[in-house]
Length: 247
Ligand SMILES: CC(C)=CCC/C(C)=C/CC/C(C)=C/CC/C(C)=C/COP(=O)(O)OP(=O)(O)O
Ligand SMILES: O=P(O)(O)OC[C@@H](O)CO
Ligand SMILES: [Mg+2]
Image (tube, rainbow, N blue to C red):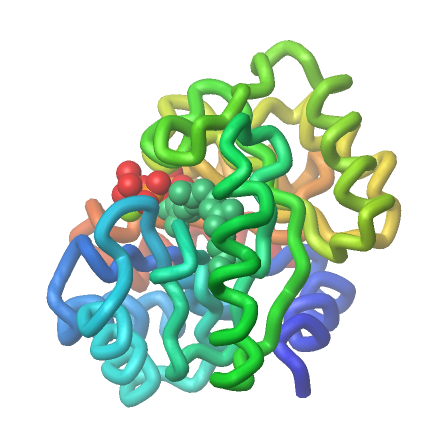
């Protein structure tokens, strides 16, 4: 089964998908694999691998290989640029940062990376990537014209544009480690216009209650990264997040 179908199927059957983001620059491959295994034991549905700085090359390949030794869920690349691709991944969120001022993040990294995606046989999942305040590192690196937290209509405008350009997924990002996630009003307004297109929400989600608020507002998939890096008991934290968002 394709990864996109696998995710969509879980969203339909269980209400919400949980994705664990691992930054290959944050720990050695063996530690990343231990985190991934604990996350899978806790009920996460797939592992995303990426980071906005220093997340390519050998460390990326080795992190993927170790994760695949320890787990059996799909591995999905979340690349900060064309260097964030690896032959060892199952799929890639093939995204355009729609509200970037920098053409490199709108189409150039995509063009530089596309021949590798083709050659390696990685499944591309087309995605509109939209960054809201506060935006964090990724907002700075991607030179995003951040959507104000209290302007859902701007997030709606970009999301609709992505949908009309044929993108299957939309990712509303507040930035890794954000003090607060995307607002429920923005999530709800975007999901309303997306209809059946899947909505991913991430950035600043650290507990079950917050994850549930995002899921209830309309998120089909919830991403958590920082909290997984920070917590002592990964399995227990993932169980908390997963049980809060699944029906
Ligand atoms: C499709 C291809 C080949 C490339 C896409 C290139 C684009 C559009 C990138 C968007 C901008 C960007 C830098 C995205 C990175 C997303 C990501 C992996 C975020 C993870 O969190 P971090 O921002 O790395 O958090 P820290 O840096 O704080 O750890
Ligand atoms: O690290 P956190 O805050 O969980 O954010 C995850 C993801 O949205 C970052 O791209
Ligand atoms: Mg990171």
